Length: 382
Image 1 (tube, rainbow, N blue to C red):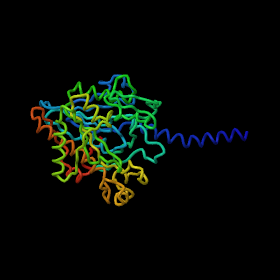
Image 2 (tube, rainbow, N blue to C red; image 1 turned 90 degrees about the vertical axis):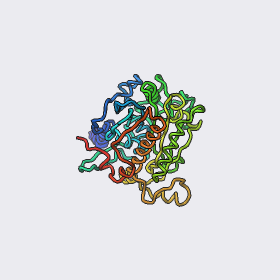
Image 3 (cartoon, rainbow, N blue to C red; image 1 turned 135 degrees about the vertical axis):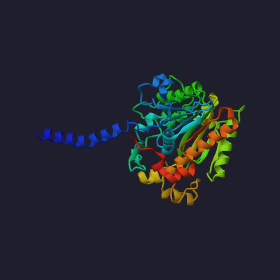
Image 4 (cartoon, rainbow, N blue to C red; image 1 turned 180 degrees about the vertical axis):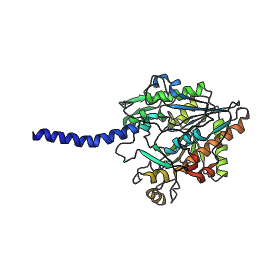
C-alpha cells in the first residue's frame, strides 16, 4: 500500500513538471502572427518550389510584393538562424510596412521554420522576448535556434557531402541541420537541404536578380557590420553594387564594409547560390551580444537592449575586435541597420540597372526607424 501511494505521489510530482513544459513546448510550435499589409500581392509556401517539404515543420511562408511596374526582383531571407533576432524582425517589419513601387520584393521571414520551435540546450536561453507597441499592446517573438529541430531531422549523420562540395563530419555533424551550410541544395537531401533546394528553385523560377540573407554574429565574429558578396570570376557586378551600398552607408555615418565570399564559404548562401544562380548574392551581419559565450543572464534586457558589460570589458582589454558600445547595441538599431542596408542595396542596384529598378517605400531611413522604435515600426495585431 505504501509503495502504491509513493508511486502516485511521484506520478503527480512528475505531472507538475511535465504539464507546464508541454504547454511551453507547444507554444514554440506556433508561428507569430504578422500584421496585414494591403500591398501584399501573394503568399506561397516554400513547398511550391520543394514539394517534399509539404506537411513538414520546415515548410514556410513566402511573401510577394509586386508593384505591377516592370523592374527587377529582390529576395530577402530572414530567420535563416532564428536566434539572430534582428534578421527575422527586419523581414517581419518589411512585410508589415513595405510598398513596392517598381519591380518585386519577395520576403521569407522564417527561412528555417523548424529552428524557431526549440532553443539551444543547456545554454540557459529563454523561449520568447516581448516588445511593446505604440497602442500599448505587446508582441512576443520566439528566440529559436540556429539549427533545425532534431525532432524534425534526426540523426545527425557521421558524414555528409552537400551539393556545393562542402563536407560535414566530426564535431561539425550538427551543421547538417544548418540551412546556411547546405546550399544550393537538392530535392532528395535531408529536410534542411530541401529548404536550400526550395530557395534555389525559387530564385530560378521567379527570376530573382538580387538576394540579401540577413544574419547576426556573436561579438567574437570578425565580420560584424559587414556584407559578404559573391564574386564569380567572370562577373564583378555584385561587388560593384555592394560597394556602392557600403559607400552610401558610410557617408550617412553607418559603418559598413564589404568582403568577398571565400572558398571556405562553400555551402553558405552568399557563395553557393551566387555560384549556381544568376542572382547577385549578399549576406549581412550585425552584432548580437546574446549569442556569445561571455554573456550573462539571457533576458529581455539582453535581447532587446543589447547591453552586456562583459563584452564591453573584453573589448576594452583587447580581446574583442568589434567596437562594443558601453551602453549596449539595441535590437532596434540592428533591425534598422538591416533595413537600411537593404534599402541602400536596392538603390545601388537600381542606379546600375535602371531598366530593372527595384524601389519601395514605407519604412523610413535608419535614423527614423531608430527614433520611432519598435512602437512605430511593428503593427498591432488586430
